[in-house]
Amino acid sequence: MPKLTEAESNNAIADRLPAMTPMGQPLDWAWLRGAPSEWGVRPKPSARGLTMSDIAIGTYGEVPEQAQRRSMAGRGSTVEGDAPDMGYILNKKSDVWSDNVRELYEEAVARQWSATRDIPWNELPELPSDIEHAVCQVFTTLAEIEMIAADLPAKWMWRMNHDYLEAKMFLCTQIMDEARHTEVFRKRALSNGGGLLYSRSSGESLLRSILEAKTYTQATALLHLLGEGFILDIFRMGELIAPSHVEKKIFRMAMQDEARHVAYGTMHLRYAVENDPDVAEEIHEALDHGELLLTTFGTNADFGSALAYLLGGGEEHIEDKGFPLQMEMQRHQFTSYLSRCERAGISRLERTKLPLDLLGIDVSKIRGTSATAA
Image 1 (cartoon, helix red, strand yellow):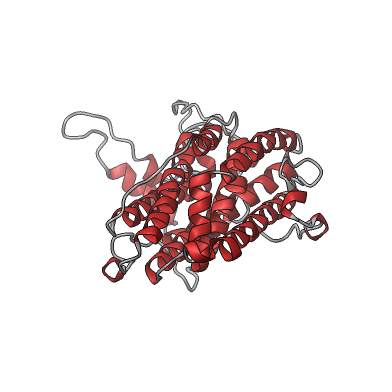
Image 2: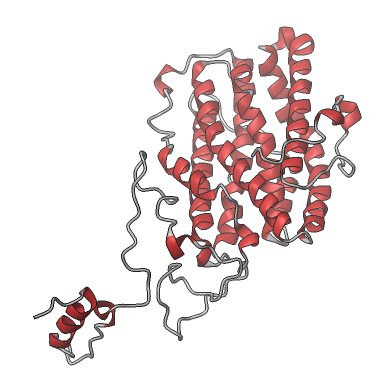
């Protein structure tokens, strides 16, 4: 007898199987007989293991520009016609996608850390009272503002079409990252005999504007491009801000997470503008408002003076070292932000509300920032 094909063999098995359960319910062996999926695909693990990029092969790796349905069925599966509508409103690839999102997801899951175990809390030195107060004020503010970067993705994720699950999966890691940042900042404020200090309305106004953005693209511009970008530069200054190796470790660990979030946001906006140029104006409108609020936040007396105090190493050098370093940090923050806008295809050089002249920012060094860097 000729050898049966795999499909013929499976059909023969299905024909011999019972049509009803012991409770009298009908059985369906369609999954055994074969569905119109791309059967036989065998992704090969890379050196790091089996990554999301490794399995993005064949039709499974084809991310549609416009989703055809609004169910939670996995991309590439066979979907019944009566699958319920989940009510997604972000149904275009340009609504949520970035070309680096798969790689960022893999990096995120590989570099998760613990605020409980990975920070040397037992090595925290006793600090002078004034320095400890400054540390507590900085971490009070950081603990307050970091959770918005978890709340915002959570607000929009359930509205994203499941065909773009890699973007949703990455945002899940961002939520975990930001919860951990809030945890570690709160722990530092409480761990050395200090406590939580002042919260001001300027910070709350900025956070509210991010959460109330009308579209996801506006929201990610305010959060990733503007807000998290500024915080990332603070983390990068951690070596100068931190009075001990414990705070330095906290800033280094948080910085690697924040860099991923900013990279996603920058490249998402670039993808969105390249594929739908009409969204550029709505991004500009959001940043017009966000920059004004951020400038107000930047003059926050508590956070700013505490940073300057730490940068100067205390009272003695706050004027000759602390404030100049703080001004340099702000100059770098604004320059980095404008450069990110250039990379995202949203040039703000002619429209920005930021006081560039006051900060001594040379616009010629920003113009023409490479569009290939993220």
